[in-house]
Length: 451
Image 1 (tube, rainbow, N blue to C red):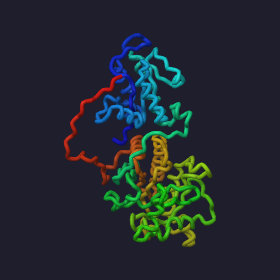
Image 2 (image 1 turned 90 degrees about the vertical axis):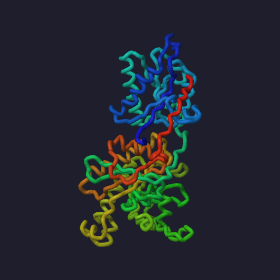
Image 3 (image 1 turned 135 degrees about the horizontal axis):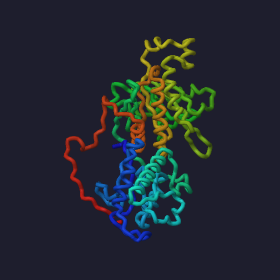
Image 4 (image 1 turned 180 degrees about the horizontal axis):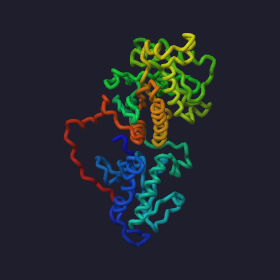
């Protein structure tokens, strides 16, 4: 399930002596009665669907230490019980703090003291009596929910080294597919995710008969498109929209030239502003009607590109521009005809574009937690626009591009958090290889690591 977050629990197993209190602790009970209910209960209390597991619950084949490190790196949440000062636990906590800047929850049984290096870190205390266990469950749930929603860092490593980037590169999605979600209370409006490479959008069976008509390009405030060789949405749109010869060489830089002409003598546009151009060759190859260039980043000499503060303005402004263009209210329409055409005149020429595709703005170098913030902000802006302008907007379908699994997971979780149900009439459904028509794989015996 892509709309389920993960929590990896780092702790001792079975019954172990507690040197601080000179008795025995049943850590399996701590896990079953305190930690797991606190995490899984968030679905009911906060709408956060989080799967909780310890490394002894992992079923996949392979070396147990490799699986453990993979889960430490990939989990949205880690819960770490430092009771008994177990060296394996401390090692895994160090790995977690080095790989993820958030959300790591520290636990200790009453009587345990934090060692010096983590002495200043917030640690939730528990005991196994009913009242203490209930307080601990509530504290864990609050810490996790607040950490996921605020994006606050809790790793000392990243506090000292804020520019550090660690972890695995996200896996690119090769298969082009579409996932659509209904907007509750707004009939006929859809939010969606388009998985895979931008160059494949509109070419698969899911969108072949209803192509996404407006593509939004993440651009800088100077409106200078990236080079085709750059690994960016801007560079790819520039290349796909250009007139090319049989060898693929660019003959006419169609979209970039039109954008340059639109800018004229202007050096920059306001952050969040949207400039509209034609689609160039994308009209013939992909059925695109317009390219909207959204000013989502700004450049600083010597330091590179930075995302604008209110990137959600790009979403709102792009959708508003689609409506204004449909009504003939933009400057180029007024200049061409002396006065704006009526909506009926516009509709008589061609139907207004009703679908838009956004990249997840600012996702290029973001960490997983930052991707979640970006997804919430941008999907939320699109949802708010559809709801607030339901009666007047021409926009019926809004999609976000998910080129890799990290962006896809962030978008899926966001759709679930917003309470958007899957659209029942979706034409493309992802099916894992071997999942259809095959018997389930036999369960492997679990190897429990010593603690």
